[in-house]
Length: 420
Image 1: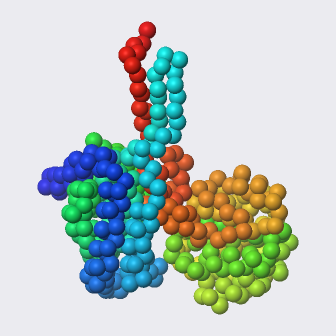
Image 2 (image 1 turned 90 degrees about the horizontal axis):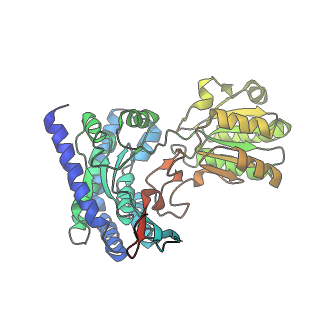
């Protein structure tokens, strides 16, 4: 790594650190006004953003990127409007900063308050989706954090265009423009340099493929919140409403297969397998879904390919689905906890007893009954947007909105107390 690149990344982090001190003192209206200014700027400059995005799409076509990646990369008027609406929605959310989480008065008269505060400087390293740039800026600024962005080379033109629009919009607001930073280098070594700045950066959030996330987790000297992959399951019980199950499973797989909350594995109880799968598998095939499954599933449909050992742990992000017939709820739970990624898993059943057992037993960030896993999303949860979906268990889990970007400190007030 060149000393010049290392110094360049450090200066970016130093500017963000200085700006974070200013951010922590701003009012709710200061932050909200800034987000609304950015939203307006994005709409005003959408033609320039789409023009930049077209350059990325042309490169993606040239390099023959998978369809799912191209879908995540593409921006159009509808998605840009959604970006702006996300900023407006975030501005409308309750500001968590300053919230009093607990108050204790000690016998000696000390008053101890536990209050919510910003984390400080958050670095977000992401791939593909350029809308992440706007979402993360919105959530970090609203929660009082400075943000350092490092996007992937596949969205370099789009990310740069959105970043510049956001920075320019901040110049007439109370938020310093230096609170939003982007590491521009396409050199992977820039990430190496960023990950060692634990004296300036407080948290790293990687968003992208499993390879990127493992690289960041293994090489960072800064705390990392991880989202490895979304191996999401739906279990169709023998007590399910099969018509409901068909609609939910179809939505979870087909509506947008390139997302981390799409269903990748479908488990079906043996007592309803024949009746349910004959219709369900035919519908999937008509929708272009490639089916893989265990021996029992393949007996029902010849269109199902044999599932390999790797299929049970693979996140396809594509129109591919692995199907397994199980003998009981316990078997389904065991399979999900063994082969899943602890992201989002669902049960379809009319039994409240089964729902309660599934909720208690499944070790995932988001657990559903009778609903599509596609709802695991900051916007759908009412968070305005998200900086990622954490599969970790410490600090933050599931869609990370404003509260996930905060920590707390203790404010202790006295009137001369000394410890004896």
